[in-house]
Image 1: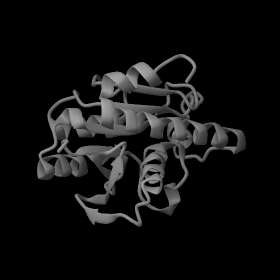
Image 2: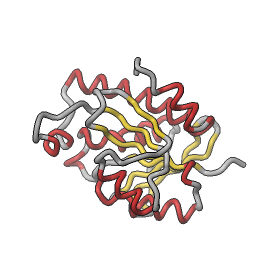
Image 3: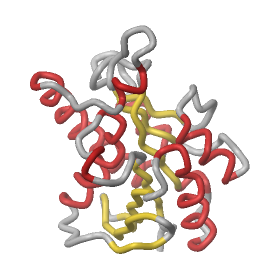
Image 4: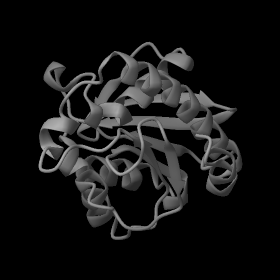
Length: 191
């Protein structure tokens, strides 16, 4: 049987943050759960967890309840409990430096200023775990906090919804074929 995979969507819990730019990771996990016909999430690992099947692979979906900047606690608990290899962990987050709706998959690397990724790297002891960044567009000078905690406007929401469909496909390719195959297919300039 194939190893359990873990898909972590980053965001902030609670209705105040629902639908914000910073919560696209949560949005993707919700979309994956819906596509897998998951009835609901349970509370575990300081987060919301559901088990799904994506492209014939067992996948644990996790939305940390610890707020974005403390996501590492939740991820570390899930990884240790299930003894998941770091190559079988995919962290999904927003990215201010990518154009709206653009996807970027990486095998590992720096956190690029994303504090959720930074905290996960701290708790896992390495930056070498796959991640999928979803572009939310650039904030104006000095407006990053308000921008990421703001909601998408009409046309932006439609573009992000399209990106989430593509990101769902990217996660399925990652789960079944690995990060390199997903990078080759979804990191192109047309995304």
